[in-house]
Image 1 (tube, rainbow, N blue to C red):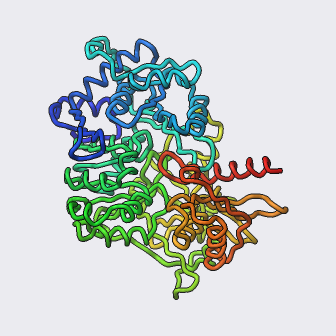
Image 2: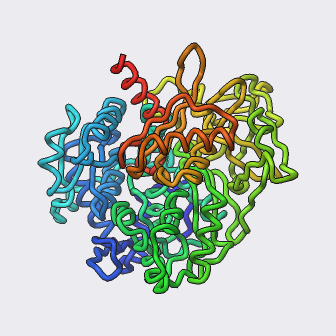
Length: 558
């Protein structure tokens, strides 16, 4: 079956069921271990379960209604997602709050619900009593894993076209309140075709990323469905508890494609020992995609050094760039292309200029995120004048995968309908800063996150990387740099999780590292316990949430 942009995902599931009904599409590692319990789902079972769930949903909702998907990681989320599509109901992927730390997750959940006003809230039978306690008002709670297969006989095929809304993908909210990107079937399908064109044929995929998040849902679940291949999943918790499970699954199932944010590769290099590593064979892994946060050359080199002897090829590492507002994928190299690392003059980047470094002083190494997909038009634009930027500027994108806008938001025009000073457009304003060098995209940081001190533009990922490298007491991936207004000026603050070392020693080490490497003074350092630095569902540090928490604590202390 050849996938085309005019297809809907209901078309794809039914076609796969007809042609490959008995083939196993999904294997879910219940415990995360390749030797443990595995749930399986064939293409035919997917179609039958989705149809039965759809018939039940049609009893309680109407086409166009929204349904919050609040499932623990597993097969049930996926069958409910497609059940919504088969019913003509718009799925809104979310996740059930962590009952051990409910406040943060509940606030985000209710913000999403207030925005999209769901009629239904779907989960498993086991989680239903819990969901009913905190479900949004007016949302009927249903368990989809108990739907009788006989319900399928009552299914009414919805009227769907490529222009119909497939789902609403809420952004992770790393720079503010979550916003729902409205994705139509044709937009998601077009992005699937772009991914396949860049990454090459998709065979077996192993994933641990949250399947309610765009990279896990679109890059793993929908990509293998469109390709008609196989998918192996384990939960994010299984990976975080023991990172070797990820690589063991790749080795066992001979995966060709798998990936995650930079921190995942870093975690593997630090927590997979020689004994576990010796059992791995990673020679099948052809695309190790890396996105969602800055890609670090040091992480890449450590990973290649650690797992090259286990068959991991240097050319398999695949830095890429994308965002929910563009469905997922925007830039990346063709499969097998070596990673591009370039050293630039740090002081020039702070002024918005792009100058390659000529010596070891004043240098900042950036990893390229590939070239724009053939369907994507990427521009680097001065965010104030809307003229092309000669150096660092805001990344603007247009193409067939750009979302239809944010659900119910008035800022549609300013974000999705931006025009250049010449009148050319519309473009999506990503809010990310970067530049094109040799045709390749390099990311500098988020416009909203940038810290400006004494006229210098400092990028938080650089500051955080310096701290993590220079201060062993700070937990990797658990540090946030942000600015606050104090004493009539913008000041730099650091929030970091630490290992319990003497706080005064850790604070001095952080201040010294930033003074020596970035020539910047730190106004305040806040050390917190493990798990207290706010993060998005994809593992990115929420710097705005850190800033808000700091402001609340500052006011309370007055």
